[in-house]
Image 1 (cartoon, rainbow, N blue to C red):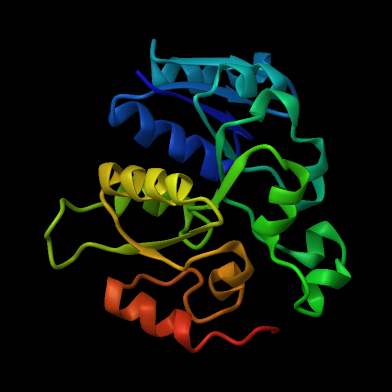
Image 2: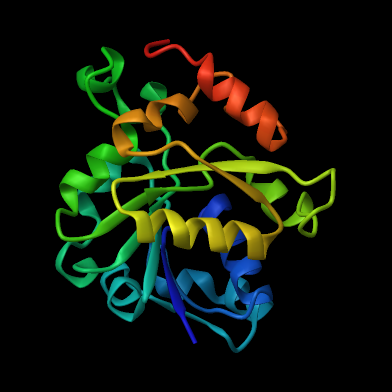
Length: 213
C-alpha cells in the first residue's frame, strides 16, 4: 500500500489527507509547529494516518505532497525525498512570500523552483488551482458530465501519471500541461486559477494565460 507523506498540514494538506485515506492510502502528515499539534486531525483521520516531522513524513513517503508556503520551500528536506515523486501544491503570493524577481518577470515557475531544490526528486504540480474545501466536496465519478478537471505539469512522465491517477481516484479529470517550464499557465491570477472547469474549459483557459500578470 502506498504511503503519502504530506509536508504541511494546512487547508490543502489536510484535505488531501482526507481524500487519500478515503482512497485507500496511508498518510504521514507533518506541520511546522510539530506533530503534537495534529492530535485533533489524526483523531478524525483514523488509524491510517500518523504524524511526524517534515523529515519523518518525507522518509515514510512513497510519494510526497509538499504544501508549505512558498517562502518556506527551501526548508523541505532534500535527501529523504531523493528518487521519489513529489507533488507541489504551491502558489506564489508576494503579499505573504515577499517579491521573487524571477517569478515576477516570468523567468521561473513556482514548481520549477521546488524541482531545483529537490534535484533528485521527480516533482509534479498538483492541487494548486482548486480551493481546499472543493478537494473533498466537488469530486464526481469518471464519466460524469459534471466532473471537474485539474491540471498537472512535470518534467517526468511517471510523476504526471501518478498525479493523473490520484486525481481520478479523488474524483477529478486531468489536463497535462507538459513540462514545468509551461506550468505558469495554471499559476495564480491566470484564467484557470481557482475556477471550476471541465477538460475543454481548462484547456481553453490554459491556452489564453498570460506569461506575466
